[in-house]
Image (cartoon, rainbow, N blue to C red; front, side, top):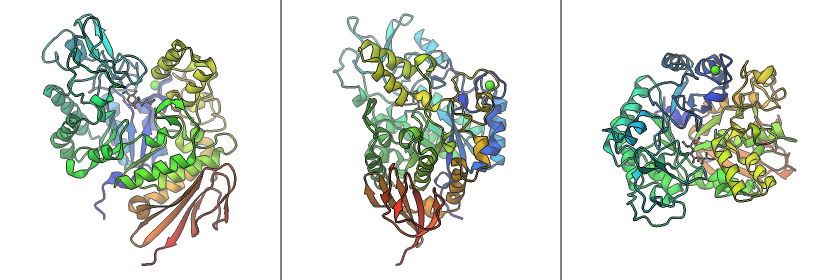
Length: 542
Ligand code: TEU
Ligand code: CA
């Protein structure tokens, strides 16, 4: 037995509950639906499920606006369903990770309702400021393309919201807020969850915003990104709660540099276990996702190497509920759908770190096929669309932005089979199913040994039994344009991984005995085919 923690050995699968599986025909995925798919997930070989928020919420931001931290949204079921999910998953050796969204609550949360009426102890639970002479307290922007201060008539003050106006930010200068959040964490850990994915956790603590004394800022993030106060709060949550349950944490950390990330995960500091960095998600844009630029594999690979080298342990992910589908973004979802999905699978499962697989990625689900804004539901997309209109951006550009970057690309319902609505729901899905479901679905891929799904199963099974892939160190061997090769090694054993994201043939820079090939090869070729991926075994001589 090794003493390596489970989260370094296993793969984590993200479920977006609204879009995963609807058991009662109301068009919304739910907990009984997830339970009904546990056998599928076990067979896939994943070790934990991260559930995007399933708490009561007015769903202005699909659950990331929580109105009660210790209940289940009736759309998803009940606390009893949650207990059943935890127990049933456990039987299959699968852990459950909850989404902890504590930068903000919903404006419908009881804490906020009492805060606006100045009812103790909630008066200072949020960030309230007067603003001077009818001016907002600061000029910061919000993440969703609007102002970040909203005037509240009841209280006669502005409150800060870094996301939608229905998502007021909590005040971490207030000890009572920290204590209340600790109670929430204990509530779920006591029910048996294994840990938390911590939403935008590196921006929870805003340095003093003095009323009327603010200086204009570019975005405002200089006042709240990885502040010393944020580290203090995280250490506190770790010491008081997380460490006592040996809980796993992954922090979603926006705009994070390797140095900032290291400060959050360095075990000596006792804050978080891991973080999600964003830099490799910015290789097809100029810093802000809406400023599009062409995807270049070399930029992507260089970024992966940079992070692999910078941190002792990373998370590895190419998709989540906020990002476009990887096969459409980094692969070719038309001519080379299967090959590019498998090449990305190989990359995802062989880098050093905890791999996070997002629902549907394992069958190569693609970006949405909506013809216009009418079917788009995401608050961010709608805000950006309207902002683009105000700025007189041409229709074509605006639509291209939405089409390539809308979060709804990843939120279309899971494609289970070729029956109506892809087998997701017998009712009308809350968001349209992608029209390619008759071709791309679980059922069709299950029994096809050549499918993307079968490839994932095989590779996950291999990784689950491979100490080299789980724990081996990382060395970049080759990186040129669209070809990437690296070595993973430990205990005198080594694997070389070669990935091409090219549409044409390329020279193969590596050799060795073929362990895995997305072209079904038995020996390593001299030239790589389009989107070819290989895992090669070599013997390290000492
Ligand atoms: O996302 C944080 C975040 O930074 C997003 O603004 C992200 O940059 C954006 O979605 C990319 O388009 C988290 C959640 O993952 C997201 O779903 C929530 O909307 C957001 O926090 C607010 O809770
Ligand atoms: Ca339902």
